[in-house]
Structures are given as structure tokens and as C-alpha cells.
Length: 303
Image 1 (cartoon, helix red, strand yellow):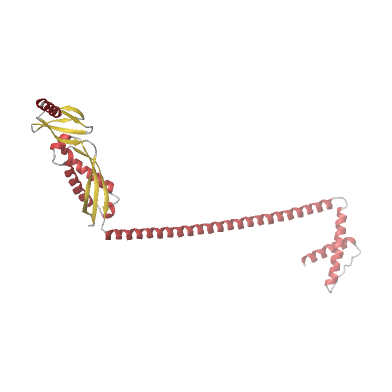
Image 2: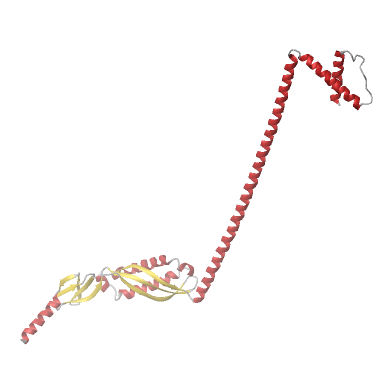
């Protein structure tokens, strides 16, 4: 019985040493008598018992590692505390096993030194806006060095940038001053725009008033011209009708009668206004009276 149990245990140990089950996204490095032999892929694998052993186990998943906080000096000599996180993935298990003793330690140390170098190239004000450029520079530097380590740096992210308290207070004052400056500029621009709008409105008002006055003068002139033209037309029409009446039958006699009446009327006015009155000798002659009347009328019109 004891022998049977020993044989079963031995068989189990042999089977255990022969069969190796590798989980998904894992890689096992097999050494045979101390020398690299093969890399086991996920699934069931068979190895030689007692001479093969699993020397290294690597995860092929993307892994994140903290980059501990460190003090960096910016280009303008300000000390800031910076920490971050780096994302790695093993792409070559053989190199990750034999290319370096501890690739995680090496990558984190290289990330810290590269970070100090990149921070030292820029001023404090730019460290907050140049995070993407710093991250890319760290990834490029580590990738170049990690070619022989069997790992791929996927990305690096800065988590915190902590300047000293005195610098934070100075930055706060600077931002407050900048905000006040922008407020004053906006207020002055508003006043300027308001003055421009008022001046533009006044200009338009003056232009509209002048145009209204111009239209009023044009209308008045056109009205006066129309009135003068109407008077001239009426006068011409009256003269034309008088001429037609004179040329008609009995027109001349009517004119002479009218002249005689005007003569008598004007003669009466002369008698009232003047102290001296000269009577014509041929007063009984109608023709002479009309001629004399015409002369008197002309003299009266001259006065």
C-alpha cells in the first residue's frame, strides 16, 4: 500500500512538472539546466520534467506604475513638486527577462530623470500649459532606451505640479491683476464704443436735419416758382383777352371810353392833391380830351 501511494505521488509530481498551464495574457520563460530554452504561450504546454523550470513569469497586459513625487527646478529657478503615472506593456518576454534586472525600476527612474530635464527647459508659467509636450518627450526618451528591455511605454501622464505656497500666492495676485486689467480694458472699450455710437447718431441727426431743410427750401422754391408762373400766365391771359377785345368790333370805342373815364378820375385826383390846375383849351374836343387824358395818366403813373 505504501509503495502504491508513493508511486501515485511520484506520478502526480511528474505530471505536475511535465504539464504547464499558462493563463491568457501571460508568458512563462523556461530554462533548461539553467539556460533559456523557450517561452510558453497561453494554454497547456508540456516540458521536460526535472530539467526544465519556469524562470520568469510576465504579464502581457498594460500596466500602470506610479512615478513618485520629486522636486524639479524650472528654467526661471522655481522649485516645483511633480508626480505622474506611466503605462507599460511587455512586448518581448525574453528581453524583459534577460535584458535588464528590473525593467519597472529602470523605467520609473528614467521617467523621473527625463521629467526633471524637461521641466528645467521651460518657465513655471508654461509648465501648466505644456503638459502634453512634456508627456510626449518623456515617452520618446524612455522608448528609445527601453528597446533592449522588451517593454513598450504606451503613455505618460503628469498628475500634479505643486509650486511653493509663496509662488502660488504670487501667481494668484498676478491672475487677479490680469483679470482687473481685462475688466478695465473692456470697460474702456465699452465707453469708446458708446461715444462712437453717440457721435454717429448725432452725425446722422445733423445729416437728416440738413436734408430736411434742403427739401423744405426746394419745396418753397418750387412753390414760389409755380406761383410766379401762375401770375405770369394769368397776366398774359388777361393781356391777350384785352388785345382780343380791342381788336373786336367796338373794342376801340370801349378803350377810348375807358381812357376818358380814367382821365377824368386822374384829373379829379390832381385837383385834390395839387394847388395849381391847368385846363386844356380844347376841353370840348373828345379826341383832345382823350389825348390829354392819356398824357395825364402817364404823368400820374410816373409819380
